[in-house]
Amino acid sequence: MNGLDLAVVGNCNFSALIDRAATVVWACLPRVDGDPVFCSLLNGGATADGFGFFEMALDGYAHSDQAYVPNTAVLRTTMRDTAGNAVQVTDCVPRFRQFGRFYRPSMLVRHIVPIAGTPRIRVRLRPASDYGARRPTISYGSNHIRYIMEPVTLRLSTDVPLTYVVDESAFRVERPLTMILGPDETLTRGIADTARDFIERSITYWREWVRYLSIPFEWQEAVIRAAITLKLCNFEETGAIVAALTTSVPEIAGSIRNWDYRYCWLRDAYFVVRALNRLGATLTMENYLGYLGNVIASSNDGRLQPVYGVGLESTLTEREQPGLIGYRGMGPVRTGNQAYAHVQHDVYGSVVMATAQSFFDQRLERIGDVSAFHQLERIGEHAVAVYDRPDAGLWEYRTIARVHTFSAAMCWAACDRLARIAERLAIPGRAAYWRAHADSLHGNIARNAWNASINSFVSYFGGADVDASLLLLHELGFLAADDPRFAATVDSVAARLKRGNFLMRYAERDDFGVPKNAFLVCTFWYVEALAALGRRNEARELFENTLAHRNHLGLMSEDIDPASGELWGNFPQTYSLVGLISAALRISKSWEDAF
Image 1 (cartoon, rainbow, N blue to C red):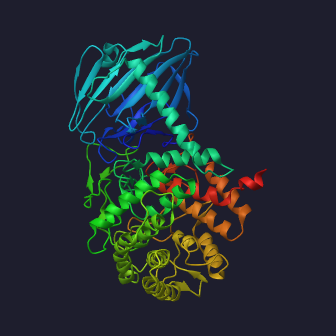
Image 2 (image 1 turned 30 degrees about the vertical axis):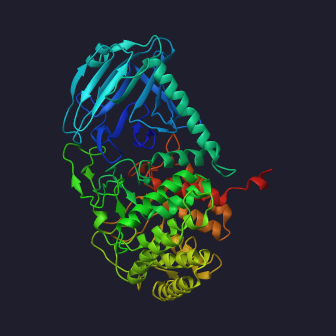
């Protein structure tokens, strides 16, 4: 069993991770980057004396089956005991339209139904606070239990006898039961009726959302699940999309590569917007563009950070949390991320390329205008000024600074897209200005990042190493697919970074040693590069192999052990999901050719 065999349920405000045995092991409040009230994922699991989980323990547990209600974020877990008794748990975080807006409370609805024999379960509801360091004060009334913590108080409304919950007694499940955990508010209807209504309306919402996706002919289930999960990584209140829902799941077993990914990296903007646009998920895309617009507006001089908080916070001080021992005991557990203070020049291209969508897509409510273009020009000026200066690069080296090829190419992309936008807006003077900059940058990058001795573009100016970001030079528009330098670079990257059927980010020693696990999105980048070169059969085979290494519900983390196939890194990983979607759209048979 993979340690990251987890499900995600959520509503774009609140999310929870649930393991195969229907135990909630991770959930943060009051928002995605907040205190984890359920934190056992990073604290040894659901143990007898532990805290930070919401368990439905089946007596005599033998095995379970788990699946989403098709095309939804509603989860069903069927657990069976050694005597043949079985119980099904349906988990739903409500999301549906109500009163002209989306209803998305910080609430988990759990519906328990006996489906064979008379199963016995034991409910253990043990929230924690202050990153596992504090326990709640408990009080209860006739049909609810209050878990009083800082900064939130949770209320469990249930038709399970409260004594069984408080005492954690095993009891027989002879009829459907309901547990609604959420804000400290009284329900306006009966518990069972509320749960039934919330589950049914949430199922309807998600199925309707999926119906309007522009999915490929092949690999539809994989793309739909990735799209729903990507949507759950969207903090809808501000439009931000977090890199992952967790912190400190190690990239590699036993390493200290434990980072907090519950923030919004601007480099993800281009990839996320590109994928959402191709799927037709325009509302999520537009909300994200609104978030980026606020980031741009807050930068008076055009200077940008690589990462911001979901509420536009610019300071994300990195700290260790001693109250949690770490994933499988592999600490430290970190909050915040030092990357906010890094110099990473690719961010300028990321923001311009993502925002460029608003100038060309007539479906959007807010179409880019001349004023918005002039705001973007400040970003472009900064890209021109820094493209050939050292930075930490997209891999976020902490003590290594070089003129990274990808960063420079993204600065070129900023100028290139600004020229295209100016042409769209019929501002010929500005179009010529930005085209001249783009041509100048392109020539300089091509001279300094090409290594003739190894017949390849390299990771940094004047270097001899390669990294997986070079696979994107065609995708960015920097190189044509038929440019022999692109084919040579793809071959060079594969020769140096391919480990079995997966690609490393890079192979050189970094701040923490030599990387051992592969970065999943890099394999998807390689798939797309192969397809661009006309090597479609090879691309399809590699794509199928990567899909086979998703967890049992079709979800992916950041990293994978290329030898064992075990998933590592924060979960679920936005980059990996976007890579899956983009690669599937690139290599699938067309609908027209399929019939």
